[in-house]
Length: 396
Image (cartoon, rainbow, N blue to C red; front, side, top):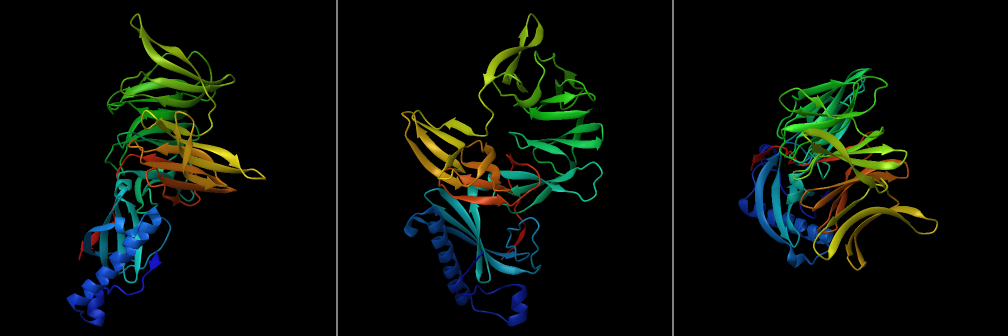
């Protein structure tokens, strides 16, 4: 939140208290606030101000001093606040700002709102240690409860969620929440334990590691969203679940952690029967990300050390095929524990630790801007390919 040099008069409720103002003064204040937004964005993006243009200003009345950008766990004065929703254009795309009396708030790039983040909010005295699954924007605003009573969760490529719910000390349910659903989930299966659930690309089947009872080995189960699940052939080795991948033009791939390392197996059909075929040993399981951007450059996100004495850093950079590297963002004194990237390779959600504090950052891979999405949380934070929730506002 930034303070402006002039006040933008509160309309609506405030008019009844302090009287009317002329349309000319409203226009003058609007020019002032949009100019402040424009200069702020130029500073954030490190570009010249004349490269930022005002595309649209929409008068609105916000329902509280959150100005339509509420953050989890914070309280805001409940009153009608007149302001603007400002849309700016830049070399990196369109951006939003929300304004109110003497303040404006950065609402992030437009494309950011096509995705969101998920985390678990603890439930006090919950006997099975379940929490509430909450969706927030990648900016860390506009929380919306998606599902109550969840132990773990995995966002899917189509915006759906597969989650587990502890039902007793010796049992879990596997749940499916559709791409646009909230509140009511479909129970898919029950077991002593589940891990790494994943949907098929078509969104009509799922696969998951499971253990049917205490002491049993891990197996893989596959099922339709409508129908009974079936257990797949036994994996060739015993190990702990690490990942399941089910891509459109590839078979189901299971990765397990063993004493030999991370072993991968793909599901194949031979002589009319399914079985697991060894793919090989994966490299180390240090968190990181790498993807080809074009024929010459790759996007890389990894952890390293720097300085004397050495301290952890997380680097986001491009790498030329000849080896030259150019940093996009360097998170200093930060140990990455996980990273997910949106399907369009525009944003990276990076989780990790700075000293003993767990933090989550979102990095705009185009502009190099980054911000803290969530402060310290007690559990994982994961990416969800589902649009964020806009808080309602009255038309001005």
